[in-house]
Image 1 (cartoon, rainbow, N blue to C red):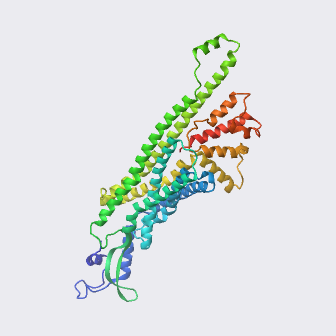
Image 2 (cartoon, rainbow, N blue to C red):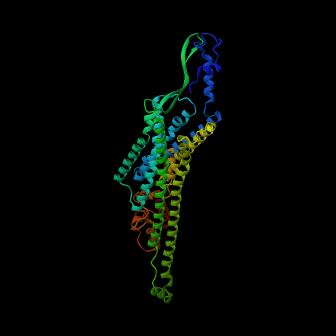
Length: 489
């Protein structure tokens, strides 16, 4: 890269004849060399002015959106003790890693890549690579652990998280951060600042008439092998590329696909079991004959059966819709990850293994690489939606945060008088698919079918202060549908 003296003479003549005896020791014009170096630096600028504005604007939009989304998820978990479940701890860990990445992606990832010059210190060079790298690993590993935890929680029909389970989730989160740091450790060890010289130790004449020796070049943050074997830099680069492909794409996508498919199958089987267990018993032939013979009692005997059958069909349809929604959400989780991270993984692999090293397409490859990075950064905006907003409990918390902190008022709850009872039910049922003993839906519907019977145990305290029993049951059934709908997502 260092230019020879004869090449420099073409751009900045020394002002004396080449055959002069002191030609080789004559200094160059310092002002001319500075202008030439500035022009060279401008020609090597990676992006044009409008491209810098475009990319910067997109990065700002992504960062602001991600800070708001992940900040709301973190606030929703830490502000209420009931939200601190083992699964929400993992969601909190994912939101924390995405929040740090949203804050640091512009100063650490985008701004240093605009210029050919890296104007920061050696510490910043290492820190700017390790922090985003460890956060990306942490985010992808957390998503994988959440998929595994979600499947086994639903399969074992766990009840609400206790303190011990939350402690396990915290320990798992800490372990994820440790593993993420270990995976990004090569970035800390081998990234250094080094000079890429264009003109080295050139004698120049300053405007003041002083003759000095100067070097012209750019400081860069890159993998270096100073004091090591000559080929260690390439080996480290290939190692990090393989680690990225494996732990940023193959492993998370494999885990998401396998466990989401297993969970989908389990939910379909579970839905069939629920339909069978909730279906009314079939009448025997003798009962059917007695119904035909007793016309006076026909209506009284048939009405409960018809009502029960209708309720069973409604429950079966509701269960199928809930399972379909959950299946679509699980597919969206795996599909969004595959779509957002595939371009970045592919272009990084091709660049690191020098499969696209044609000098004629350097500018095109540079823009494709930056675009793929932006696409992958969209995941920090999508994750709060998939793992937060689509969960009913989080959505209620987001609404409450909006009314409390932005509008400085309390949200009006249609069933506000039963909020404590509903919260307790949600707290004890949020990690289960259904209750084998007696579901809230079944209990409520049985109470409607039995006109003169006493109120169900779970509803006695609420019915005493409710003006309309059917209205109260309707509100509670809707709430229970929401709880069951996203109890495992």
